[in-house]
Each structure stands twice: as structure tokens, then as C-alpha cells.
Length: 287
Image (cartoon, rainbow, N blue to C red; front, side):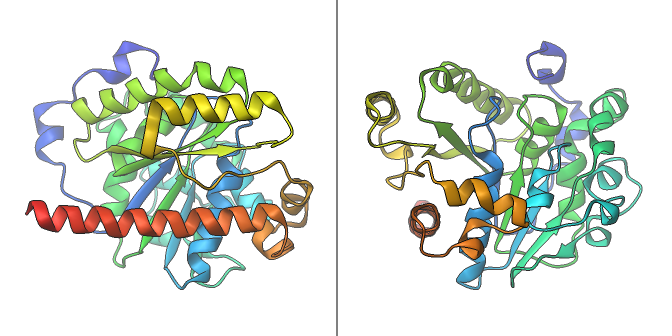
């Protein structure tokens, strides 16, 4: 677990020296150690919305529960070769990528075997860099790679953060969701210092908001007051269509394009694209 100092010790000099840049577009880890905040829903629907504007997307399901795989209609019987086999060095990333039902959107599925990866990798060399190394070897590029992290700050999430250049945090509009946010931000900073200097907190997206609820409004106000422009303007509402869509193996954007949840995720995708354009302009200016 990342909560254990052992996983946040500095890697060896050899590991640091062998940290080549990943030749891909933006790599976004969607992470929050609290479960039930809308990580997978955000991963699936944000990826779908970006694919709808013909961005080439790869979604990596790093959660042993495999909910992102289910949400994109990947049958359990086809998941034997997924991200677990890549992390264990049994095959390359390009061998486990599957096309989804959404044009321009590919997926690397997860199976329950992934639940054993934490223990199996703990004594392995370059255990924190397994995902990054695999992405480095991909023979083709994506505009965006999105990693759906498990609801824990363990070795799987660490692999995602070491591979990514951005972290997107879905935050449920309730009091308890706020408690772990400061710890998550500290973890991102720690990973940046030790393993991945290119990692940044890309933004926070508020989820499961109920405009009729005073607590939702208060949480939103507090988060915006503290994190300022890091908080997306797009807010994902509580919406029955969002809840129904996974049982049909579809993103809500395909299940019901006109519902409030679909419109919110489309708005989120537009904001993300604008942020990426702004970031690239700033990077060119700095250069």
C-alpha cells in the first residue's frame, strides 16, 4: 500500500536512469482512494466523449473489479489476457488491447487475477514502472490514455501514477469525500518527487451532485474555494441513466445521449480539451 512508507522509498539509481519518456499523448490516471465516487463512470464516459470527436483513446482498466471493462461491454470470458499479464511481463501491451463498441476507443481489460498483482509484484524489480515500461514499448500512439485506478492507494495505483503525466480526481459531493482529498494530493506530490517528475494534478471533477441538496452545494463551494481553477466547471449530477447504463454494457453517452449525465460528461470533455490546449501553449511559451 502507498500508505506504507516502503512503497514510497526512492527507486534505485538504475531505475531512475532508465526512465524514458512515454511516447504517447496525454496519459491521465483517474484516481481517488475512496470507492463509490464515480471513477469508473468518469473514465468510461470521458473516454467515450473524447472518442466522439475522433480522438484516439486507450482506456486501461487497473481495477481488479473490472467495472470499466463491464461498462464497455467486454465479456468476462475474454478478459484472461489483460493488464495483469502485462504487469507480470507475460506479454506486451499491444497484445491485450481490444477495440470497444465505441469507434476510436480501445480498452485493456481487467480480470480478478489483477487482485493478486499487489502481492506478486512486491518483490519484483522495477515494480513501480511496469505499466510505464509497457506503454513505452507500444508500437503505435494514442491521443489520450486513461487509466481507471482501483479505490486504494496501492501498487496498482502507484503504477498508474508513475506512467501518467496527469491525475484527474473525481470527488463525490459529500462530506466524507473531502476527508481523503488532502491525503491524495500529498500522495501525488510524493510520487512526483520520488518517481515521476512529470506528474501533476490535472483537475478535480465533482460527481453525484444534487442541486437540491444543501450539502452538495456546500461541498462544491468549499472545494472551489480551496482548489480554485483546478476544479472543473462541469459538475456530474446524480442521474438515473448514469446508474442504468453499466447494466447494458454501455457508456451513458451511448445509452441516453440527451440525459443530464451525458450532457455533463460531454461538457467535461470539452473543458479537458481546452485545458490541454492551454497547457501546450504555456509549454511552448516556456520553451
